[in-house]
Image (cartoon, rainbow, N blue to C red):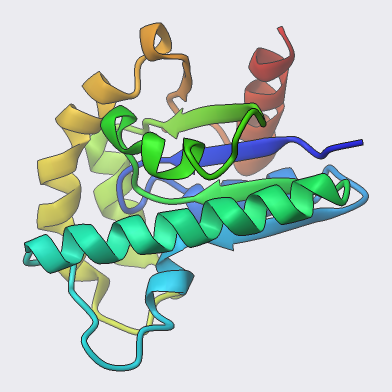
Length: 177
């Protein structure tokens, strides 16, 4: 039996990694695939998302395709798969075309901008100054909110006032409705 494939999106500081790990913990077999980690495997020539270029676009497409192929392989072996990335609806095809007919459950974490900025300031899971993510979060907040709407098939959850357990419970409840 194939495992469910989740795509968790949100601006920096939305809680993608935390929610992805907590969601994985609900399954007997699960894998978390952070697209950022795949991008960090590039040893030389890494294109930064801070100053977006055509090369950045190309490298994100490569990482997303790799994540999707991994997701398909693990799902085929019965693993639940949770991919996390800052992804808009117009980027979903970079995953979907590698998943063939496998369904993709899309979740957008949409905390308030103030909450996401504060979370970024407090994070310790990055090897760089997370303050540099604030302009990125501010730039993406409105566009991601508009792009990842329920009308486009996303489960959009405002996690501003929810803890991790409550957020995951809400996501699962809405996915199973």
